[in-house]
Length: 137
Length: 114
Ligand SMILES: Nc1ncnc2c1ncn2[C@@H]1O[C@H](COP(=O)(O)OP(=O)(O)OP(=O)(O)O)[C@@H](O)[C@H]1O
Ligand SMILES: [Mg+2]
Image 1 (tube, rainbow over the protein chains, first blue to last red):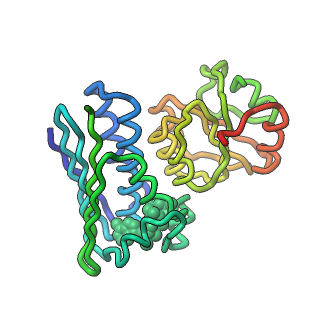
Image 2: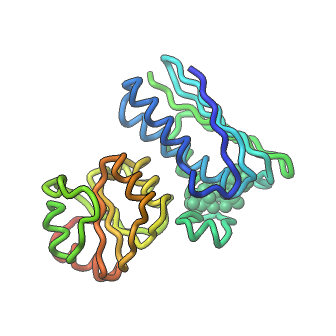
Image 3: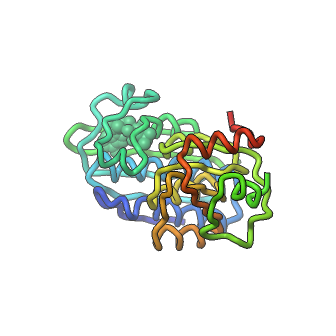
């Protein structure tokens, strides 16, 4: 199964819509509740990041009998130091993002905790690709 | 603790989910930072917050949290209520500050997540 969703820069009103759709699809497929939660929390964090820190992008979802793979590609500004960004508490969130309840610097560490495989590729001035996998077996 | 009792202790209004007030809650968690909420494994909790926007509801949805209590007299808007109802949530609202709300519930025996 393959789905795609668009995410728009600074569109906080719709942040979480794609994650919510993915949650519903996983439920319909009778996937284990713990695995649904782990994937959905990770996707939501990454979706909010693409809206808050990047210029929007696309979410690609692939589900088969063994795993769910979610790839989020955004169009910049990229992350200069991924290791630093992965540290708990590190955040460059704007005042507006903080007002929305984000900017604790917990999103990326949260994603890492929840998924079985995480691959982040980023190029400054180009964009960020974050690939997350949760295995069913 | 039952939702009904929680509402009594802090003099809260039940904004939506009146039919579910007999439900039992094990723990309370208070935060205005959504990524903190998203670190929790526990699900039988009440989220106590002063952050009142659609992301509060989305966060609860993703974390499987069924009860949200807004302190400091924050009122959820139509869009938030609709989303809460779609997800079968209970929403409470109190005029008390976050500090007083949490203090009263802790004193009454509601357990912290950690
Ligand atoms: N898609 C992205 N594009 C550019 N920078 C990013 C992206 N995702 C994360 N970052 C950078 O990494 C930092 C840490 O991200 P992380 O998700 O851990 O925390 P946060 O978004 O700042 O706060 P929180 O997720 O707790 O609400 C961000 O503040 C930002 O500087
Ligand atoms: Mg984040």
